Amino acid sequence: HICGGVVGLLSGIAAMSFRKGSSRHRVAGNVFFFAMLTMASTAAYLGNLFGGASALYLVTTGWLTARRREGETTIFDWGALLFGLAVGVPIVTDGLRIASGSIPPKPGVPVGMILFLGSVVLVAAAGDLRMLVRGGGFGRQRIARHLWRMCFGLFIATGSFLAQRRVMAFLGGPKIMLLAPLPLLLMIFWLIRVRFKNAYERKSVTSGDVHALPT
Image (cartoon, rainbow, N blue to C red; front, side):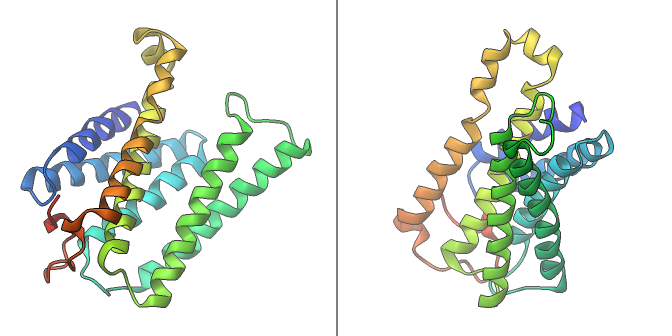
């Protein structure tokens, strides 16, 4: 689990640093994807079922977005929608029950973080439904879908790595967790750039590869 988080963190940073469309960006993105699969599956095995499932869902759907052509959907996308709902609804339900005092809080996990994660998963599921109704992803919406899901996966990897007791002690204590939201800030930056930069106004290239678009 720790190894997956470390590799995911490093490869995720590399993918965001390399020029979009370059072979290095693709390689780093693929390494990040498989590292996150490892981290998510081991997290679920170790008892963090919904946290691992959330990471698995977001990163997988984000990665597949970059692998497909515009307007392309498959039966997998319907399955992903159902999976997202099956993960997000119980997380939000648990958060609300903890907030109301119906069940005891989870040790070391703030109720706000539980509600935040569940809400993000449900927003992603709503995005899946919107994409399916529209007949696939197109243009900037498709790029943004890939971008924010992969960045949120990097946020999960960062938090998982920094929250390890040995890592926290080695890096100077709990204050190191202040770095955990950094991927979310980078996500906001890139989403704004995708939304407003002229380079993203044109349509995706005919190959359908998100990574082939200019930065």
